[in-house]
Length: 457
Image (cartoon, rainbow, N blue to C red; front, side):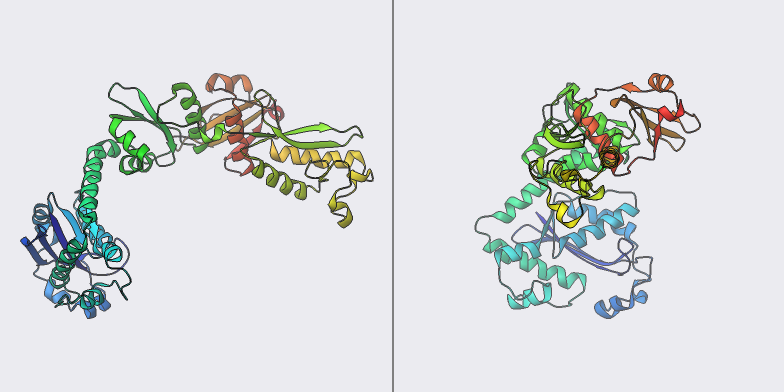
C-alpha cells in the first residue's frame, strides 16, 4: 500500500518552514482507496515568492485547521504504507518536522518518484514534476497545489509500476519497510543514549559484548548501526539486545579505552582495531662520524621508537616534512643513499652534515628538536583534557616514555606529583597503538594542556 503525498510550505529558513497545504492519496497499486486534502494554518508567515508560486496566501489560511488538528488523520491514512512523493526527502522532512514540534516521532518507509523515474525512464529532458508528466502525457491541473501535484504523482507511480517488469519498486518498498521496522525496534535503545563522547557496548540476549565502538556522539553512531544496510550492520541488528555506554568526556580517552576494551573482550563483530596495525617505527641512532640519524624500520613490540606510523607512505611523508622543517640531511634520515651527499647539499638546503661540513653539535641539536616534536617532549608527562563535567578534567599519565593509564580529577585539584597521579588513574596497557594515538593527539595540539612532571618536581 502506498500513501502518495504532496505538501506546500511557507518557505523560509531550513527546518523553520511550515506546511500550508497537504494532499494524501492512499493507493493500492490499482486505485485510490482513501484520500485526505486540506489547507493548514502554519502559524508563521508565508514568503512572498511562495504566495506568487502557489496562490496560497495568509487570508486563505486564517480559518484553516492547524497541523495538530489534522495530525491524527495523517497518521491514520499513512499507517502501514510506504510514503511516495516526487522528491520524497522534502515532503518526508516537512512531515517529520511538524510532528517533531508536537513531540511525536513520525516514521514511514519512503519511495521517491524522481529516483524511480530516472531509473525506469532514462534520458528525459527534465525530471521536475511538471515537465516530466507533460512529456509522458499525464494530465496535470492545479500545478503547485498539493492535490493537483499529488494526483499527477499517483498517475506517474502507476506508469512506473507498469514499466517495472523486474518489480524493483515493490522490492524497494519492502526493503524500506523492513528497515523502518528495524529502526522502530531499536528506537527506544537509541533514545536512552546521550549524544556525548564515550565508548558504547552492544550486547546480545545473554549479555555478552558483541561490538565495542567509540564516538563523540554515541547516540548518532549507535543509530547508524541500527539503520545500516551492510551485511555487518544487519548481523549486528539481529543479535543486539541491549546497549551500555561509558562517558569519557575526552575523545582521546574514548579511543584509548576502545582499544583496550576490544583487546580485553574480543567482541565477535569487531575487526582488529585499525590503530593496532602500526607497522613502522622511527628509530634513532648515532653514525660512526658522530651525527645523529633517524630511519624508518618495521615496528616491533617493546622498542621505544621516536614515533610510529601505520604505513610506509605515511612514514616517509611525515619524515620528509620534518626533515624540511628542521633542515635535516636526507642522507641521515635515510630518505636517500647513505653513500653519497644528499640532493639538498647542492641547493644549500642541507647545511653539510652529509659532507662533514656542518658541526656535529649544531646538527644534532636540530635532530633533538625534531625528535621532541615527533615524540613525547619529556619522559614524564601529564596530558590534561576535557572531563565528563564542566568542573572536571581528564588526565593521561606518561611515565618513563610509557603510557600508564588515565583518570579524572577536579578542575580545582592541582596534580603535579607522579605518585599522586598514579593513585587516581586506571592502569592501562602500554601498547604500540595507544602510544601512537597519544603522540598523534599531542602533535596535532588536540589536548588542552601538557605538563612536564620533571619540571614540577
